Image (cartoon, rainbow over all chains, first blue to last red; front, side, top):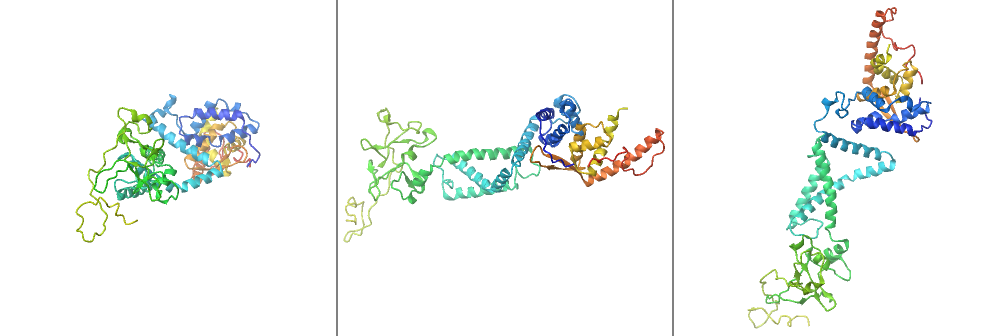
Length: 370
Length: 126
């Protein structure tokens, strides 16, 4: 009885099956597949045997016969039969369950259709823990980004101090892995409730979405390499200033006596300008919260190493407008963050003189390097 | 006499007997039932019955993939199905004996008749 001859699926068989399937639309996908699985082969063989689809009669009657013999009651949607009593009170709820179950079934069908797909899926399944860690990280990043002023995201989120970010990250990873291992709600129940399934799906979907947002909040690979890890980059230009891992947007200089200075030009030991990265300086979100920073000028060139850099609260902060200087409210030099800084001096031993009784204005001239 | 009504009552046991004889897929079971004398059996009724017996645990099913054309879904009997078949066989034997006696069809042999419904053995088309 094992027919090895090739079975041809004729169009009228598919057409007939389609009509039967439509008639069974009220069943769950699982029930329907259970009922129709193999039917394609059965009908094809009937045709191959010399029969015809026409002798099967009306596909709707055929579907009803199939349903009755299988003991599956008709649902109330059809307007007759005893199914009305069994009809769930919330059709929307049933729809969602069917949608979820159906998607899962369809996905499994699709995956199992080819060895390559199956293998790829196996690999992906093995990598699930990676996603568990990733989504925890995303959650903490989102929390970081949504609190406090905007700044570039860092690999380990910082909440003011160094410790809390790491602690939060560890806690989030722990929670996410427990969720992944189905040890905690909403993934814990063997037969998960609809609410739990929807919540779980929503959380994962949100994490995927937020992953894009978080990734977008990182400086580009280029700026990362040059600015955040500027110390490691052995390249020629330093496109930005970084202080303790944080992007520097402006610099305030004070003289040795503690007086704020304006128009200080800064260079490094090789004579390269110590300039903030304009991209970093003005790519700020949340509109007016942070001012746009404008450069000084060398005539035709912009000077980003002259401090403090003028600022303007011109709204957006996204687009710097060169004509801003002719406006009624041109950019201005911001107030230094510290009203007073302690005077500073070189700790040179001064034989014959008592300990310094004041700042040494001539400290620079006394530099030990001739 | 409308045999389709009679058929409804015995379709379960008939299908179980056919599958017990040898695993089969839907159309194959239909063919064997018809060859066994149940000419009027409907395709869809048999398919539905197979699915229902499967859902109740009396049958198992497995898919035999085919490189060309659609996959065939085979059914086999489970131990639960076999004991169900035994019960229904006995029930049928005593029922048919009673009805035959009532109808004055002579005294049929009582006891375990293996295939009392038909002169043919179900599942002969192997």
